[in-house]
Structure formats: C-alpha cells, structure tokens
Image (cartoon, rainbow over the protein chains, first blue to last red):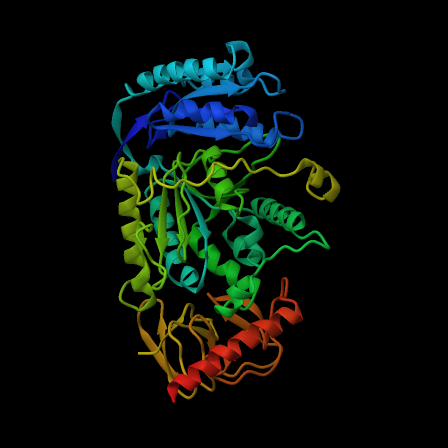
Length: 391
Length: 118
C-alpha cells in the first residue's frame, strides 16, 4: 500500500507540510500566535516553562525534535531576547537536517509590532519555499504511528484497543513502526512485557522506566488516582485489568526497544517493529512526545472524547454505543454486540491510516486542536526521588 | 440476547456487554464470535462487569485476557459477580473505603435493575 508523502532532505516522509513557529519563551507566545494567524498551515509551539534553559533541557530537546518532525516543512524560531534559550540553539540542529529555518528576536527587532510584521514576512517566505516540495509515492512502511488511549471505559478494552492493536500489527507486517507509551499505566503488565521484549536487556530497561514513572506519581502523602471509582463501577476490578485492556492497543509484536525522552537525548525508532516509549499518559503532552519521536500520526482509542493534535493527525477510535459521535474516525461499536470483528475494524483503521497519510483530513483536523503541551519531568523531583537514574 | 465476552481460553470470567438481571441466562461468546456456553446469574451483573465462569476458591487467580488480573479473596460460585468485593490486585489494591463505595454504587445499580424487572 502506498500514499503520497513529502520527502524531506533527511530522507524522512511527511504526511503534512506545516510551518512551525517555535516560541522559545512564554513571553513571545502572543507574537507567535499573531504571526501564525496570517500564515496558512502554520502551528505554534510555545515553551511555557519560563525562559530558562537550566532544568528545562527536556523541553529544549523536544522543541528541536518537533521542529525536525517530518510533518514540519520549515520553522521560524522566535525569542523575546531576555531569556537564556537562544533561538540559534534551536534553529541550528533543525537547519542541519536540511529544513528552511529562520530566527527572530523581539528585542533586537524593534519590539512586538515590528516583530509580528517581520515574522509574517519570514514565515510566508518559508511557507512558499516548502510549498514547492513535491508529493511522491511512498510505501506505508515509511509510517511511524503512535498509539494512545484516553477517556477509557469498558468498551476500550473490548473494542477500540484490540482494533488499534490489530491495525498496529498489520502496519508492522507492512514494514511500518508502532510506538506506545503511558508507562504508568503498564503497572501489572510486566509478565506480558517480559514475553514481548526482544531481549532480557530490553525488558530490564522497560521495567526500570516503569518503576521510575511509578515513583514519580506515587509520592506518599499526595493523592494520585490510578483507578477512579467510576472506572470500577464501570466494571474494572484491578489496575492489572485496566492496564491489560490498555495494553491491547499495542498489538502483539515483539517490543524492539523503549525510546527515552529526557534531558540528555530523545531516542528515535530505527527499524520496522513495535517500540515502547516514555510518552506521557497525559494527552496534550503525549501528542508532542510522539511528534518528537518522529511519529507522523497517532491512533487514539477512547470511550468518547476528542483528543487532537495540529502537527500529527489523530485518528480517533471508539466502541462506546452511548457516547459515539462525529468526533470519531473509526466506529468499533459493532464489536460490542458481535456484529463486527476486531480484524475487520483493524482493516478499516489501516485503510484510514493510508487515507490520512494521503492528505485526507481526520474528523477533527484543523478543528479544536489540543494544546501542544511541552510536558517534562521535573528535575528537582528526579533528584529528590534519587531512584530515577540521574534523570 | 444477553451477550458476555470471554477474551481468552484461560479466562475464568466473562465481561457483560449488557445489564443482566438475577437468575437470567448469560450467553458466553468468544472473541471470534463463537458461542461457547450459557451460565445462570446468581445476582444482577451490570454492563461492563464480570461473571464467574466456574467456582473460584479463595486464593485462586482470576484470569481475563489470558492474564492474571488479581486473586480471589472469598469463595466465588459460578454465576456470581466477580469484582472488588471478592478480588484484590496483586500490584496496587484499591483502598478498603473506596471498595466499599464502589460496591455501594454497584448494589444500587443491582437493586434498580431488579426493580425494573418487576
């Protein structure tokens, strides 16, 4: 199966041709949004953790990695000018892989009004350049697809998650790559993961990262929900049951590796197969995590809710009879009453993946996007917890 | 049809895809759509909850998806509701007071279900 994609200079394939404005500090967020309003297909990614670099390296690394995502054709990096993250530091590694990149600093450019004006001109120039990128026929083996759940209920473990897993398996059979995450929600799945990991070494790495995530979210004296009362009244008895239902969306293929996202580096998948990752369970942040791992698309399973991302399109799958609505791209309801099969819905997902890769919009594309949250691990908490390897 | 789903051969529970009243027949189906067996319910099983496919003894493991989802904490009869009142997690169990509240809400659903039957 083939689709028409944008081949980037580094060889990666984009399924969208966006321009990205990276606001390296929160003070230039408004400037970035004013520029974006005037340039079609542009997206704003803002660092909202202040303008300091120290302690925010994971965010810094993600800003670069999102700029390098194949769905991004070109980038404008802007800064207020008084912070410690220089736009050049972000722009350079993105330019290095062959993308048109420009920078703009408000203080040096005569203030907010002038910077908006100049920014619009600069971004339009980048946009014109990337619009010349031809679309070429490529195989779906070029696709890297993230898989995540949210708004889960009983139908998730029975219908939408197994269907997504079925599609991920088929994508990998065709030479593609699948990436899962949400390590906190893999508690109780270790035996299953041990069987799936390609080696003892990979399993140990997975296990230690799950334990690290567990320690971050289970600090004594703080209330963190692993299961809501609503989850249980809906029929989920233990965290194992919830986690195993969630694991279904990750298919059945061997786990090649676990991709780390941290203050020192961001891993990238290297060859066809399934990967776990440190992608957060929090939806907005997960979209950015997946984009920084190089994914071009996300499968999102739900009871019913509308998670969306403006850089990497999200295909939403639900099997909830009561809450299904036109936010959903894939209807898995038939599985619940025996009128449809997981295999058939899996095939529908694969067809949808190819259509969306080909440029067809998802149900919510360009409509009601989630915030591009730059989620990062708090370095102070990492230090206090000690157990999280220097991270 | 009162459809229940058994996800794996190993499983000793099946999940209700409908609200099933007390003393009713649960039709147990496998993932491939094959009808496996029928079981009588000893109590109302609300949608999304699990029914025991056979007697399960205190200390036995509960299997769903072919994996262990917890351990039985009091003897369960075939046809009983399998939930937080008779199963605990082997990883992080739900605190007692939360379990109480969950079962209080489940009881209300069960009673309403049975009232509607009449």
